[in-house]
Length: 388
Image (cartoon, rainbow, N blue to C red; front, side):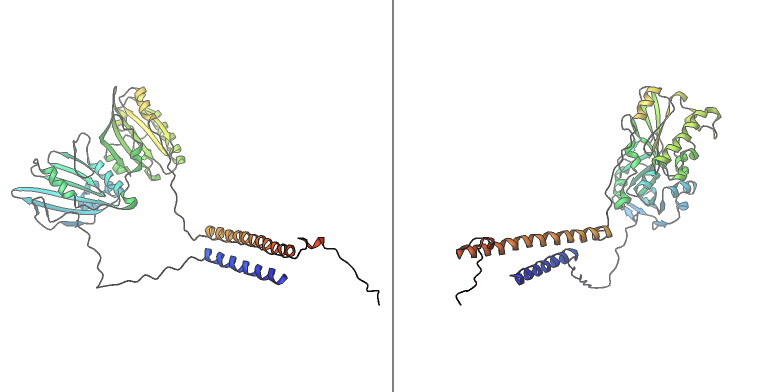
């Protein structure tokens, strides 16, 4: 009986060990096989500007440009802030008409939208091209993905917008995080917003060039800040809302105090108020902070309406799950502890079942022979054999 218990225990421990090893050791993946039918070639990237489209033919081969200064030397500082990586220029002809096009490529959608809002002036009408477009006389400006297209027609006709839409179809689209728009735009209140006046800036040159309200040094672009300005048509007058996004709430709190003190200085402020602040009703100027965002309202609206507009700015933190390595030390340790726990549970369960099986079998055997269930009820007799 003792040997039976030992054999059962060894078998149980061996089975539990095999289960633990199977849990800790992942199955090996089959080695992938590669079949090649020729020399591999990477797919060619489609150029930003084609040789021809919608009846327009390029006078010369479209010219690739790697230096942003060749695209716009006057605003090269702003283009670099938006992450311009180059682009292409081309001149097209169709009969006696001409079309000059420059396509500017950026690292991501945020840079492209910022550059588009930098070039677009307030009051330009909206056009349905790409993801956003506008026009000014013979000039058409639009953006799609991480590309901004600036086209100048010798003559704008009824089909000019359709021709630009044909050109927009061939523009590339970024993937992943590069395809995300600036998050700060979601914090702009939508009521009474004039969307054609929204300007997004990632540096002092882009902010000042698009008519920023504050002096660039007061914004704090050296702290990786991003700013957006937009005009609102309130019942009592126009108002301009400026939102500045900082990496942390602590940076935003420190910059909020700096901006508030600058506005309180009034005519004695250094540097002096820019024209948008000078033209504003000083009573309506107000600053507020919500998380890492600092908001400033200016313009000619009455203080109550300006305050109501500013209170609509609310930062809402979004928690995202960070992907972790499936084979890190924490996961390995947890697997090891779970294996030990499983081993203890299996061993105890096997011992209990084995005890019930062997003990119950022995009891049945004794009952079948007419004896009590337990040996403790057996009467012991000692015989001395005195007959000899």
